[in-house]
Length: 341
Image 1: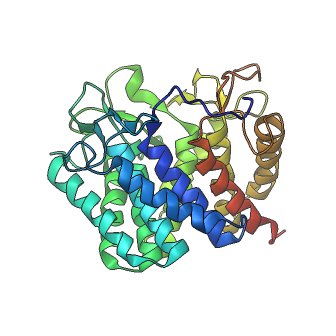
Image 2: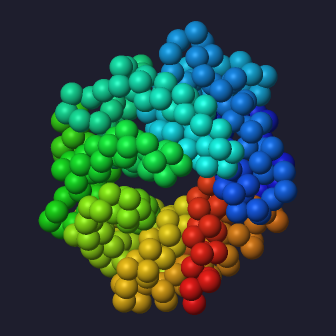
């Protein structure tokens, strides 16, 4: 929290991808003079340091500071962010040759990690972790970014497949929630883990679904209504802060508060305000004050407090770089929103 790099921990692929996205966004919006050069440099080092580093197809999970491979897992969550990095890089630079990186990544996922009941496995080698909706949500995001930056229909077609997986597997129409953890057949896990919902992911999906609706013409209203209703009713504690985890019945399971659910709630309420949802604009302003007052201004300049405990005290002594992507997305949407009020 002093703003100094923690050189003892490995550097994860997903963070490198999120930094490419952040620099590319800053370049497109004119927010930082050297952002274009940073995006180009970060994109090149992403390929150099992570792609086929051990001689095998795909991307390694993390490297040490000296460049040696720290974790050679092929993690589907990290691979999803390659797609986001490529799409945002193409948007910022116009360099469509970078699409070969995305296509190679998609070919790897199709060849090495397809799951028999839909979507993709968690990674290779296979572990004992349950299947999650989260990697598929970010595949959806990456594919929409590729579609938006290229208008090549193959990416929208793939995004449609992720939407169908959401609609038929991850979303429970009654009571209108998004489950997090699934068995091999993509059925919610038995017991409490199968009833966990994350308000932050409800909001993240709302924003993505509205984006997909604009691009595809497919109505997503019934999904958005269910997700919004549950998150709005059960996602907040008595202090008006978003909890990390709840259960389907609304019970708060993990009462800590992180930065990223606030940024995703901001994005969701901004698109819902544009869609005419009652009181969404007021919710945007309240959330913006929470983001600024609780997570940003109490951190070093340009930084953030990533997690607070249920009493509002900092619950971490590090500032994970992965959070920058969420903050940048929220600022991008807030900047647009501010011109409408």
